[in-house]
Length: 187
Image 1: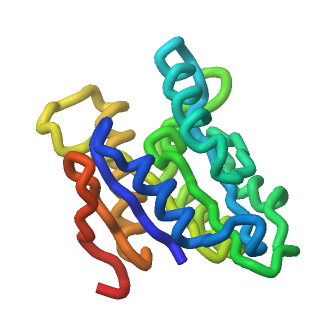
Image 2 (image 1 turned 135 degrees about the vertical axis):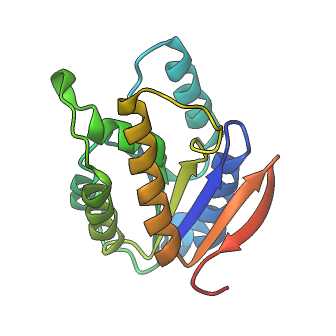
């Protein structure tokens, strides 16, 4: 099952997603559950390093195995084992960084159409998980007109977010740290 968590900057979406993972895997490893944290942010400056460190500190006692892929996330399936007798819960943090990683790859390469690729990779990865919690940012409602490349990035991100919302078990938006269920298959 896919659970989508949406929110603006500093909305509490990461904390909410981490708590959701704990609820979906009660008792953690003692109960046979395995938690994975798929980190997609590629550190590029002091601010991003500080954000990564903050997230690591917050989840240090939550029994996550951390996987780091800024692109090609389907490779993470190789690391996920179905040998547990509990559930496998994966937290993908976050979709905007994954979209950027896929679009603006190594060596300055640029792929303008990545939404289908990202969806394929997410669906492939979801096959080895009982639950996938995906965090995404609300970046496309500011009303500002950007250059063509940035507009395309926002379009690709919105495209993936919309497709994920359509297939997710639940979709929750964090508004000033308040979770508001806005959709999902069981609504």
